[in-house]
Length: 130
Image (cartoon, rainbow, N blue to C red):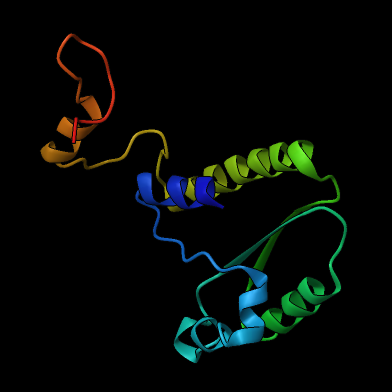
C-alpha cells in the first residue's frame, strides 16, 4: 500500500488515503462512502486466502463507488511480490489514461530537486545529520 501511495504522489497522479479493512467496522465508512466521494475509485488490496469480511466490504463499497481489486491467494513474500507487480501495472495504466509518464513528472519544484539530489559531504547519499 505504501508503494501504491508513493507512486501516485510522486508521479503527480493524486493522493491516496490508506485504510485497513478492520477500520470500516469502527466507522471508517463514514469518510469513504460520503456521496461527494463516490466518484473517487477505491482500490482494495488483499494478500492471502479470501477473507469473508473483506469480501463483504468490497460488495458494500461497490454499491456506492467503483472498486478496483488487487488480490492474490498467495501469502507472505510471494503474495507481497505479486501485489507489488500489480501495483506497478495499475499505476502505469492510470498514467497512460491520464496522459502522464509516471517516471517523468511534468513539473518539479527546484526545492524538490535539491532534496532529490542531496548528498552528504564526501559525495555519499543519505539523510542530513540531526
